[in-house]
Structure formats: C-alpha cells, structure tokens
Length: 484
Image (spheres, rainbow, N blue to C red):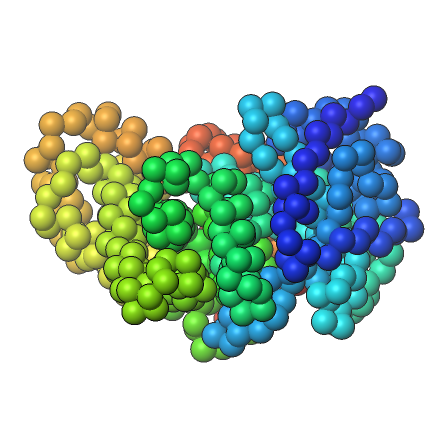
C-alpha cells in the first residue's frame, strides 16, 4: 500500500545558512506504539499504509520517503533570558506534506539522531517524553488551541542514557511550520540583511495572506505575529496551561504552541504556578506568561528593525507602536474568554472586577481551577469546596445578578459555558499514570483511554468523570523536566 506522501521542500529552497542537509541516524528495531489515524487522514495520508513496516521505517528515520529532503534547521534563542546559538539538535525535518486542501505541513522526526546543532547531545529522545508530547499536544488540539500535533511514536529498540537507562523513541511531529522567533534572531545576528528579508518574505508567503496590500509588509508581519501570540497565550491562560519554557526559540511565527517539554496543566489556581524543575526563579510561571510573550515579541521586533525602515529611529518607533498593542490585544482575548467561561454574552463595566474577584477567591482558598468552572457550568455548587466560603457565596449572588442583566436564557448561558469550560484537562497525575504504564510495563491501554477521554474535552460525558478528579493531596509539588 502507498502511504500517499506528497512532499514539497520550500524551506530547503531558502539560503543554505538556515539549515544543514542530513539524513536521520538509523535505529536498530523500530516498533510503532501509537498512530494518529485521524490526523493522518486529514493530511491526505493512508492510515492503513502508515502502520506497515515500510512506513514504520520512515517514522524511525531508517527510510527516506520519496520526495523528502531531510534537513536540520538552524536558529538561535533567548533561553531563560540568555541569548545563544541553537538549532535542531535532535530533530530532522523530512519535508512539507501537501494536504488535500492545499495546506502545507512540516513533517519532523524528533529524536532522530545527532545534527550539527546537537552541542554534545546524543540526538535521541526517550519514550516517556515523546508520549507525553503526543498526549498534551493532542489534548491542546481538542481544546481548540493552536498547536503542533503528533502523528506517530515509534520505539527504536535502543537504550538511551539520561539519569538512568531509558527506552529510546522517535516522535513524528506535524506543524504549520517550525519558523520561530529564534529563527529570525539567528538571521539577524549571523545572516545578511538580504537573508533576513528572504526569510521574512518566506514567512509571509507561508503564513499570512493580505501582505501584498500592506504599505509596509514587514510591519504587517510583525503585527500579525503579535496578534496571533496575544490570542494564543490568552487561550493558554483560560485553560490553566503552563508552557514551562517560553524561550524565544519556543515561540512560533505561525501562532502554534510548540515544544512540550516541562509543560503541565494547573490544578490549584495560583498565578505563581511553576512545574519546570529548572525554573527556580519562576520566570515562566503561569501568571508571567503574558509578560514573557511580550518580551519575546520585542526580541522579534529587534530582529526585524533593518526591514521595518531604512532609518533606525523610525524603525524603532514603528516597532514600539506595534508592540504597544500586545497587552491590549491579549487583554481583549482573555476578557472575552473569561466572559464566555462565566456565561456572559454582553459586556458590562463591572465584569473585570467580577472576574478578578473570583480568581482572587480561588487563589486564596486554593480552589481547583478547572473544576471550579466545571461546577459553575453544571450549576452544582454543592460539589464545590468554595460553597462554604462566605466571600464566594457573596460573589455568586453578584454573578447571578449580572447574568440577569442580559437577554439570553439560562439554557443559552449554560450552553456558552459548556462550550468554554472543558470538563477535563490532561491532569498531571493521569498523564504520569499513562506514561508509567507504557514505559514501565509496555501497557498502552491506559494512555489510549486517556486520549479517548481528552478527544472531546467539552463533552461532559459520564465517562469523563473519573478524569475530572483532582490528584490526592501531596506534600511534594508536581515537577516536570526538560526531556523532550
């Protein structure tokens, strides 16, 4: 059977500075452990053929499919505020699959071996982190949040060494592109102005329609990236997602979430929530994500200055004006989303105070973020620990009075809330349970059941109830590690 790969390689037609052509490093005995059939079909691929030995060899990097031109991308980035040269240290871009509707999607093998950008690493990945990215990225997609996605995970039959011996694996990642803020930082620092211009023109052609009519196409580009990132980060905040490592190389130009390393979803609402074991100062804490988004976009703007205007002062002025819109855009998206979570169709001046008061009560009383909105959606106050709190009861009366000011019926309010508040998220203890079963016992059924429950997080089905339960109390805070 033919897998129906339909590759183009537009990135490979950029100047050589932006990549190194090389093939993945073959592995010993690959085995397919999970295949995203729904995603495969949307890409125009034959899902049955993708389960064949021939396709498994593609996912493992042992075989290059017809039309692919494998390469590793070069980029730079600010990592925890420190600028450095980076690049795909263990990822190989096979090429771009042209989907049936004409869309273009990167097909990348993550964990496919060493590259010129590996910086001493082994270029490999462990099974647990690859399955973790699969789970979280697919959950994000189901939540309606722009994201890279996961097509398949194969084990390699090899052992890799971290703190302990771990089974090796390769993830096949699908993305609108892997262009990053760090790609432009790299071009600005090590390339020529013409190479920077070529990269920006490529990004415009690939991701942004309407630039032909813009008076200043590079200002238009900056404004569009700002707009997309404002909306993306607002969506993260609305579901309690903590990215964990918002370095500039982990911010895409397309506006997709990328690089699921030390990420996790917040249980107890707290602006200071940090999961990453290396983020000891809380730079990338939940409450800081909007500010870091603006900081990263400022680094993009700095890289684009030579394109914005020939006069540096005027270029800086244009960049500052564009960047000044980010907080307003973010606030608009966040406020619109919070109103929807609380069933508000109309806008009232006191809405911000009402929303802020609820969040403050939740933080003071360590309420579960997702389940608080879930209980409000289902109108089941008796299930909420907050129902015994005087401030919350007073808040609830204010909220009900606010809802009475709008013409929508109670049913319409509940429908809006159900569509805006997920019944479940990929809770950390459930994700770890699935990973332990898969890695330690070779049992993938726990992960498959979790993925099924997460595939429609707004269903509010009885089957989802067990996945809505928060973790048992623990003296040890949940920690994640940069393993992906």
